[in-house]
Amino acid sequence: MITSGEGKYKVFIKKIKNGDDLIYILGGGERSHIGGVVICEPGIKTNSIRIKGHYDDIVLKPIAEVACEKYNKKVVAIGGVHVDNASKEEIDILVKNCKELVKYI
Image 1: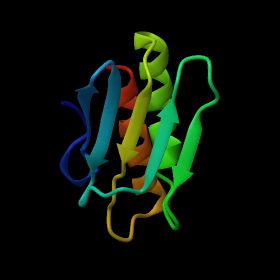
Image 2: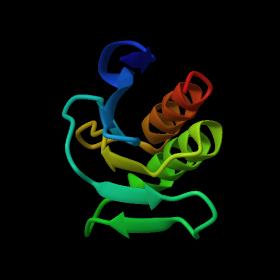
Image 3: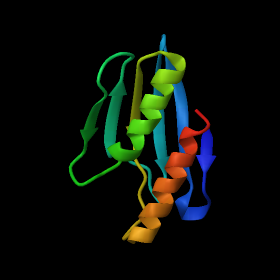
């Protein structure tokens, strides 16, 4: 598991091998949840699913795309992070921490 940030801004990704394919689970903040799903396959346009009211697909997309390119495998990234009544500044911190995770894929 890879983590970034501290306290209620701590986020993580966990990699699971599924045969030749990869699944990345994103979570953190005060409560992990499923806010989006991103599917990436080499040479194919990335597909994103946004769960109503959530924007987690925005931070899931680079996770899936970087892993897909690096390992040349099909990748699914799923999950989400949540902080209750988050301000714009708090959301920016969470997004920054999620982007930091991508560096370690």
